[in-house]
Amino acid sequence: MAEGPSTLESSSQVGNEKSYSYLPQTYWGLDPLHRAFVKMFVRDVLEMDNYPGHPVMNVYAYKNHPISRVDLVGWVVRVEEREKLFNYAIDDGTGVIGCTCWKPRVQSTTGKGLIDDNDYSTTGASTSANSAEQEFAEFLALKTQEIKKCVRQLRQPVKLGDLLHVRGRIKSYRGRREVGAAYFHLVVDPTCSTEIRRTMEQLQLYQDFYDVPFQLPGCQEGGDNSEAGVVKSLQDAIADFLNTNSTVLNFEIKELATVDSLMAIVQKARKEKDSTINAKQVFSLFTRAVGGLEELGIVYKSDKDNLYVVIDRDATLESSVLDIVRRESQKPKYSESGCHYRHVLDCLRTNHRFSGVSPNVVVHILDKLESQSDVISTSENYYIAF
Image 1 (cartoon, rainbow, N blue to C red):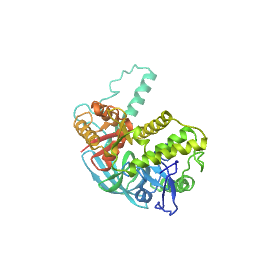
Image 2: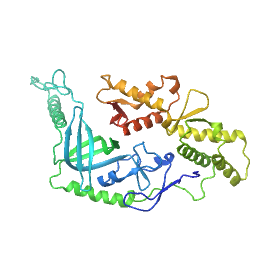
Image 3: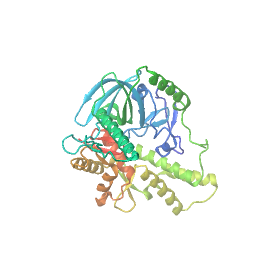
Image 4: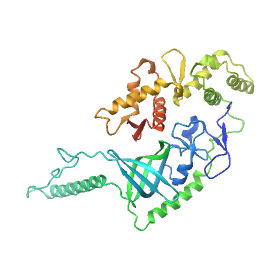
């Protein structure tokens, strides 16, 4: 049973046979690469394994870094156009990966469009207008033309052989890894100078950051015996217990106190501090540890008192979230851009059974549904169902 932040060892890593101490999900936010758009080579994006212990969260391990977002630049080698998106395949010289790029929301030219040719027109301006007004009118006309040009460029798809810059989340769709683009931009680089500079930057980033395993600040071999350290160790141990005991669908906090391996952590801390601990203090430690798991989206508190449910084993919760996304996706407001996970959460909480569900639980379920190709993310935190 885990007793500290470094719990899981593995020898399967990208480009290195050395084993690493992987981070519990509690500490992912301490690694600056977790939420950053990491400038990686396509080969490494394709070869990374799912982060150990979290196979459905679209989080991958490079060394022991939890990677979920990437920043890629490559040459377009495949173009597929669909009604609402483009599927591009880009090649950076190390591999080829697909990128889902959503079309910009540009209104039709019939009726009131995004930019109308008559908008901000300077025709008929009074010749008696002073110079300041004339300069402003000219400036406004120039900016209007620039906006029109940008809109025309967005309407034109990227062509084969273009250099494309993509930022987005790594995801799996029908068994194939790809990038759901939150941003994509056509790079004009006739001399390849931009590509060369980027490659040099990537090599430096790999050397200075990516290839250096992350270590928790102030992490000591003996562990943290403070009350907060005991809670964190207990939280990791409970998560490990739930992962290894698939028959546990729900539990009460008092039931956890009957598990010998969990109580051993509390007793170890008591002996090292040479102090006594009563039943009320034990219950408080377990309550704080389970509360941390609830914030991480691993369990949620049901409508019954003190009963917590493991979300990966609650088929009703998963189907309810999927039904909400499907229903909301049919509405005109969400038919193109999708609905925000907070909106899904609000709809879900109208059911009394799920009134205690936290936002992280909904995000976890949506990530799982996306990995199963039941929903897709149109942009950061927005989802739509097929």
